[in-house]
Image 1 (cartoon, rainbow, N blue to C red):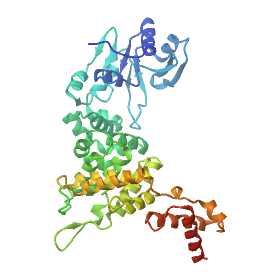
Image 2 (spheres, rainbow, N blue to C red):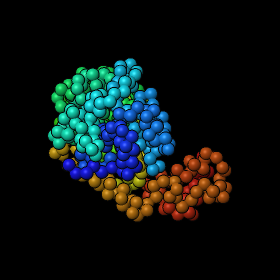
Image 3 (cartoon, helix red, strand yellow):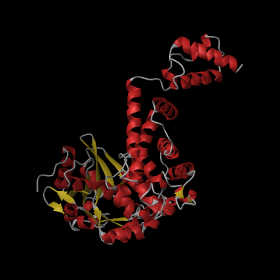
Image 4 (tube, rainbow, N blue to C red):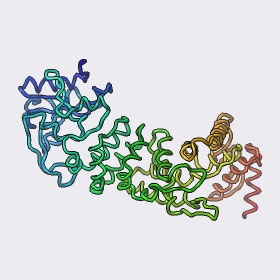
Length: 447
């Protein structure tokens, strides 16, 4: 095996512990990343030294008692924080997050046995090389995610490990081993004991993975625990010639067709969440979902708030879902009006969502893709020609209107907006004198 590459400050901590007569290993994600050819961001050390002994070894360093109850301290080495944890075994997990007590051990193998997945249960030291008691190296080579020991026990200890397994599969494209997958699904209800913040963060990271489609389809029963509002979309035939997939499969395929960005992926998954509630069948036997965008947006906002997502994400995802069926004619004035109405950020994301929605509805129909391509082309032309589409682009401002004799107040904003709409519709030229004259006339009409 080639030399394990890690920072000098980490090497210094390992060496100091070994010189003090203790075992010390790099463990977890950094070992997995190294074996996968990825440069690790964090390096955790596990040692046979008890916390007080670690503090004694580094008596001349700053040592922070970050989690000393559970055997963890942080050593500042060369100005960088290095986390050092004593080999341990865990007691019961009453809060399904942290053990009520830990017992220190001299065995690195016992320490590795309490970890979640085999690929995270590998240790390394320069003297001993790799310590791999659970076959993590082979699982890495085979691209397999497998729980350490009894998966149901692992997931009952901390149910968030279920979502971590999904996230790891989504991000890496690894396959979850069948027994582990079945235990994840059967233990999914335990996620109800996990805080919304932890679930929201893990779910958002998972949905941005490259293999998100496979994961969301395989583990849909777990998704339904997190977002029960999606339950009605499972296997729901849309009975519509424009859709060749059931509602949930279409939604998953929409999410997977979008760039790996939380706002877009969430909007893709949730954009039709209100369809089951609005489903009806016409006399011709065709399924319809009148008003589903509005209902979907209302449900989406509740879901995002429940998952404690940040305010930008809640607002943007909700608006994208609300507007995903908004029709825009491929003419410049309609593009300018839409960008003025939504803002550039939302408009461009809406184009992405519409493109993915069309692809996921009927991949063989190029009509919707041609329309989106035309709309994007017109937007780019608008930007290149520096055409007016917001109040800040007008040749006048509020001070100009006040100078022309129009009183201060809310009327100023309304007149500027009227000027903008007239310019966007090509009724007026965007010049100072033309707009001032128009504003004065409009103001007189409303006195």
